[in-house]
Length: 330
Ligand code: SF4
Image (cartoon, rainbow, N blue to C red; front, side, top):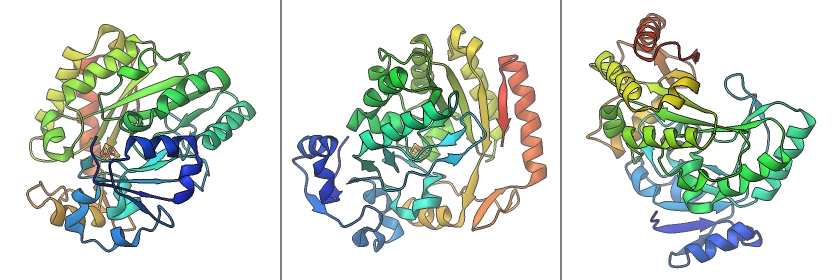
């Protein structure tokens, strides 16, 4: 992965990972900042710079470690080793939190985060911890090897399970790890036309299918996230095509053991503002006929539109993928 510059909190270099990154990116300008959370120079840039801003790497330490209860695959959302991402999905949920500063931030105090996680897992056994809700850990792992650090350590010392979703294919280094079945791997999928036009900078559908098959073969419990479902023109044909491609491309083992999660797209005023200026040629995901306000500048599909999509998806999944469990549609 190539970056233009590194913005870093100077005390990051007191951590082994900080020093490793300093060496890894020694050819780039390193610009000290007081806090990864407020880099004035970035905040002042116009929205049109959004794509360029993602070419910077931000390095710091994570200071807040509050676990948030969750009731989906995991029991808790855990702030972990990164936030943000170098890809540019036009609906990226992180833009709601970070606005145009949704670039990749790496937090080098991983030992501290891991110790806390292990301790919590022993205190409250049998829980599942979502460690990838703030970034894409498979992508991050290509820079930091953090999953190579996290997975075997949790397998050996933790109780319960870890889980994270991804849109990337780079699973090779994970295949031979000692995971002891304690890591639930979730691949996020969408029809290829959606990936090409909207999930900019992520792996193709075929690559994602191959990656999840390999993770399943390596013994990881695996699921698929059909997310976010985007109701643009021709969506029924596109999602039918996706299900057929999954039926054809997923291994027998994967089809037998997987589960599905389905999430309809949420969009926002901030996305519209950034996308209009940063990606003027991209499709407009806001549809005033189909969407309604959801508070704090967010939009979601109207209840009757969601209901129709849900019926369609459940029927088509049943027809094409048989009795694959659907954990939820939200
Ligand atoms: S891959 Fe995930 S984190 Fe990265 S831009 Fe897309 S939605 Fe956001």
